[in-house]
Image 1 (tube, helix red, strand yellow):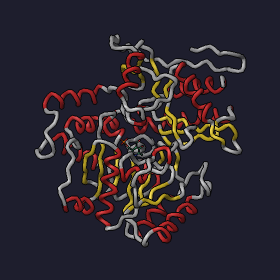
Image 2 (cartoon, helix red, strand yellow):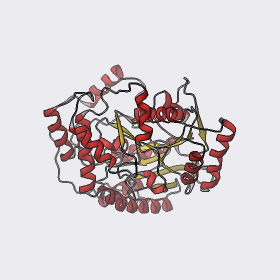
Image 3 (cartoon, helix red, strand yellow):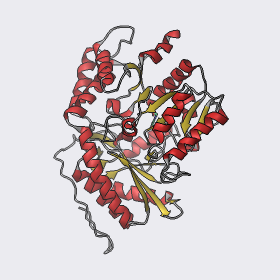
Image 4 (cartoon, helix red, strand yellow):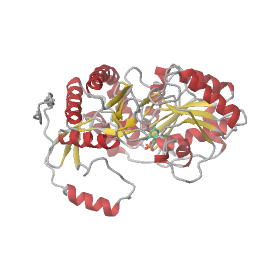
Length: 450
Ligand code: PLP
């Protein structure tokens, strides 16, 4: 437990028990790696801490540095490591598949690929059963947008302001935060007013926001669109839950003008939101195309687009191919992930622990003025820091100080949002109540030290 620095700080975080010792590390030091990183990796690579941690090992919800120091991983590799770091079943599936076949391409048959496609389809409603594998969320969104354009014969796509959908031409066009956009051609996307209950123009009135999509279609397009694309909860955008009632109205509007609805489940899929397996389910809508990545492989590079046989037909007009998409090692990992989520009841756990954690974070909000908002579902939670609750002034500097302090106390957490002032809590779904308590107590301590 850490000791309180002064009388104002009442908390003494109880360190959760976790009986595991990582193997001794004999590799290069953090300084040596950092020097190489600065010389050989792209200068665009950023890090949150004054000096990034040298992570050499992972086990379930924990990460370990070169000195064997343990950190609770509250970011989960950016909402990616859903089963836990190096989950033994996922490791076993990867090793077994690597020992029998690492790559052959989709030109041949291999059951690792078709078994996983079948298992994925079984998780989706109705006719959503045709899978195209990619290597990332960006690629999945590029493909989804292209399919919608081909299917409808329209170019216009609507996405939401504050969205993040990827970093290639089409997906960067759909992304709507200047932080993530370069000034190159990304045409054909219109950005609707974000139905953000905390910062949005119409508060939590989902129907008012939905009217803006109607207006965009009438005044910004020929009256037809290829698609509407959105996350169920915006992740990079700062864990923004879409105002209730918004998506069903928008989906109807889009369908009426002949467009398709694309659900970007890259962050919100694979049981993360707890109440449902997919984020869109909590909005009561059924998309035409679903894109996924991150949690799908527990950290193995894999993405997918799933759609109906009718829509998938558009790709037969030309040859369409992806060398690594559907690599058998990745799909073996994906199948193991689905089995672990089910057997270990990770969705139920995300719901129970996430609800408990959100309750504790709300209690923290009542204690600390700097917490302006607590939001999200399951183990996809956001804590927005503001220096003035009335003005919602983003606490951009303070959040870095709190993060640094939390790291010192053994918790790694993510941050995001347009202003970079929102904690993003997206841990492995095996996160337990003790971990939740530790996270909140450490945050409490770190905020009190500001
Ligand atoms: N869509 C969403 C919702 C994301 O959060 C991300 C990445 O953060 C992407 C798409 C792009 O995925 P990738 O980084 O795997 O290309």
